Image 1 (cartoon, helix red, strand yellow):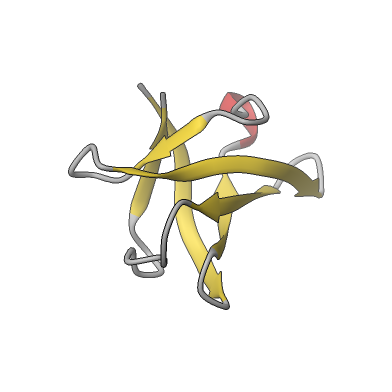
Image 2: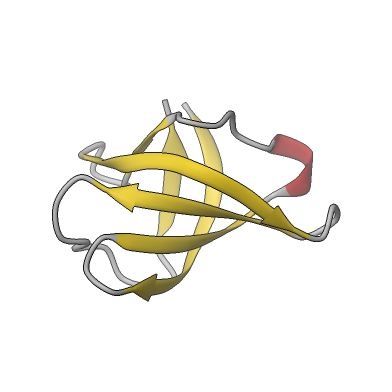
Length: 74
């Protein structure tokens, strides 16, 4: 398990934007879990500045996590 970063925003029902740590970029299509180790979704895209990247996560169901929570990659 490695930390992806913190949730920056929730867009619509199934899309969340996560601020990543540049030193530990996750792989595309990695499974994302929350602090309780419940599966949240998959990483669909990495974008932004090289020093401050963002990830787009497509949630399996409706996003129940809140902005500011940490998320992890499996």
